[in-house]
Length: 186
Image (tube, rainbow, N blue to C red; front, side):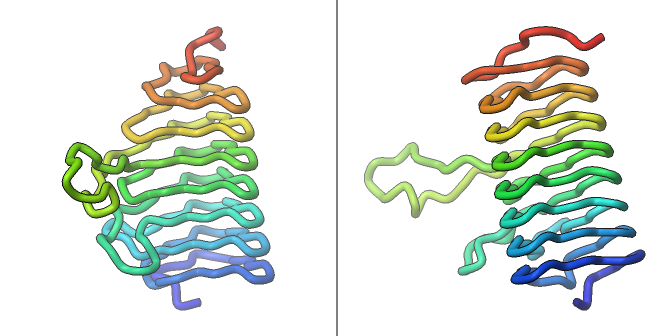
């Protein structure tokens, strides 16, 4: 695969696409399931910790594969997972901590399209790169959306189908559209 660095066993499923692998650093026991796509072309690389799994049909995309500006990148901590059919848009920098569970069909976006001008198409106005940080020991339940500029505090739970548009304090349970705190875990 010619990764920038691989510290142990890497299991790659059928139909997996890993583009620009020289920008990927993988820890021990990385599992990339069938038909996942990882585009690693980014300023800060795609850095994956130990015992991480990336589910079937998941997409990690810091840069548009058809040209355009290079994205910032992604860091995934140890013992974390990206669920099947999830989308990680790391044009802005995304950091996922240790022991984070990301369920199926979760979308994380670290950018927003610029659309302030009306004299040119929105597509031609570019994007504003931000960040997303998911701290250690979080659970992001199925079909949730995490928007740019958000930090999800340690030990938090994002309920299924939620849209997180603001920071989540540590040990919180949030739900809804937009997500609001429904209880504290501590």
